[in-house]
Amino acid sequence: QVQLVESGGGLVQPGGSLRLSCAASGFTFSNYAMSWYRQAPGKERELVGVIFIAGDSTKYAESVKGRFTISRDNARNTLYLQMNSLKPEDTAVYYCYRTGDYWGKGTLVTVSS
Image (cartoon, rainbow, N blue to C red; front, side, top):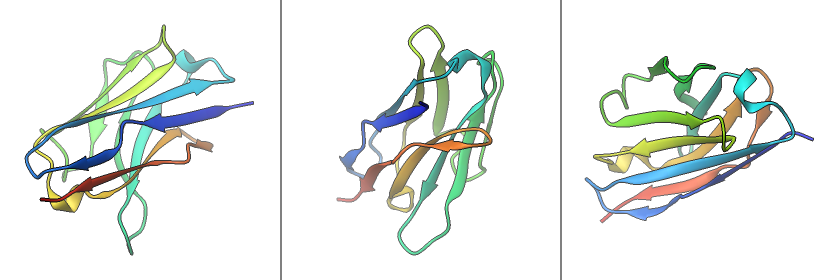
């Protein structure tokens, strides 16, 4: 069955960096566009960005553009989210999403001093 397992979340100070990973299994990873979403406390889930099948095309929310980078390793069936210059407002649960249907369980990122 399809599984998406996020890792790499944690507590980081403002201005710091984190890299999230999403290990995919149960499907042909290279055939799907993949996305990262996030949900902050008390807010709706929002799109962070998407990476298309070949990995050479990405799109980002304006709030993270220039700070976050999505990448994928199709040989390792893994999706990544490199987050730099983190701000307190980036605090959220981050979810991996197979575009169209499956979600991971999420990993918590807390940006605080």
